[in-house]
Length: 373
Image 1 (spheres, rainbow, N blue to C red):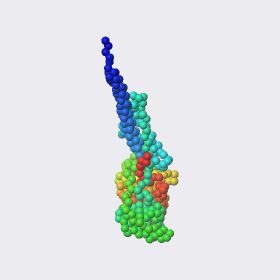
Image 2 (image 1 turned 90 degrees about the horizontal axis):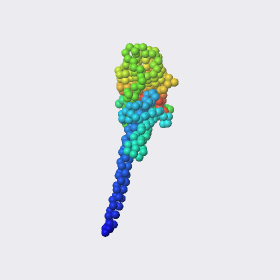
Image 3 (image 1 turned 135 degrees about the horizontal axis):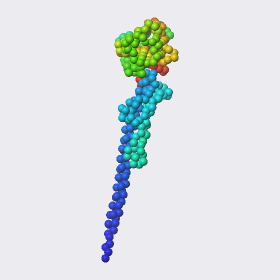
Image 4 (image 1 turned 180 degrees about the horizontal axis):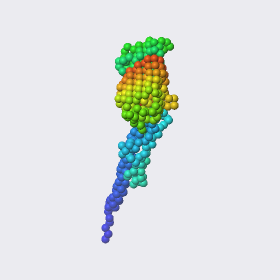
């Protein structure tokens, strides 16, 4: 005698089989989701770390170019991001102008994605930094100290605007073409036709900042003590001096020279400069003429952290004179294509100062590097 199986038992076993199939499918989907999540997270964090590294490399490359050096890659940026297996290439760009590009690549393990035949991913990142001119470099002439007076008189013509955080006095044959502004009340303008300048009162304008790090030349030869007594009349390349630099003959700087804290520069025979000369907490005095070498970049003279700049003679300057905590004193006849910036500025003699904000001097010291991409 045979028993008949209940139809419900077959249906139960069939349902159990279907449930197992669904469960396997769900587990496969879940594993795929977990794999995808882990892989996406791995790639995302690698992308973030690599982007940080290339951004730092682009900024450093632009900083190097601003100082006149060729931009180079630095493995240290990758080490900081714990990515020693990555590579970075740093190159200057022509478009946009004065920009540096850093491109990085790194191979990221496929993690769980390897279960699906994906062994690794290639992550790429790009950063672009540009040298920009900021702050009061919309002025050919800038005086930062309050409430002192900036005087434009005699045969002094300023093309490109002037600003004083104190008062601005324009008199006699003095002329300011462009904006003439002051932050304190009491400015005067009595210049003669065809110069009919008026002075507008505007809020205080902070002194632009140029840090010592920005002016420290790379790969420099360091000279100190007695070595400064035998410096050649032509300095080619980058130098850092720990001594007073005094010379009665004309000297030539074809590179970048930084004079360290407390030491002064006194040049009695004049100077031809194709590059930069900077003192930190020291002053620069030049007699006999300052001339920019037409074959080099613009001349830059800077006295940081309270130093002064004094120039006496007949000078053709293509660049910037910058004393953010001191006084720029110009005596004699100067033709300046660039900017004069000081906590105080004293002008006497014949002067023509011309500044084009649309085409600023290449080596203007007050520059900043900023990420633009």
